[in-house]
Image (tube, rainbow, N blue to C red):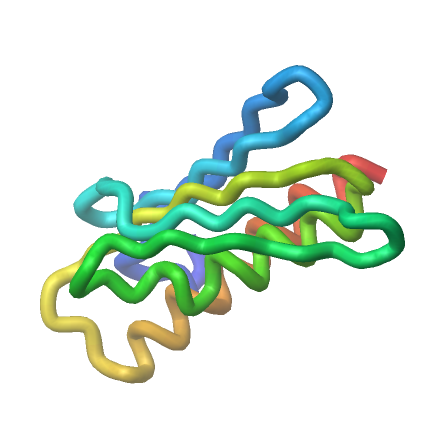
Length: 112
């Protein structure tokens, strides 16, 4: 366990193929559904649609992850995200975002 991930070891990214599409489930802490973002190819452009549960903040990163994954994999990608830790500081939130983005980077690199 690295110090950077201390306290956030339970953050998980799981991937499920849904036909030609992909579902990424990203959870940690108290697992739940806080936001869902779907990115898809529309001609030469990748577009996204996001739905957030009120009072949740996961949408602030789920859409960018969906866009990045759809562009990298050339397929429709839905990201469902729910991460909750009590009383996180701003630094803790930034650490969670870094960990999530690192996991997404690792997943995308493994798909190439």
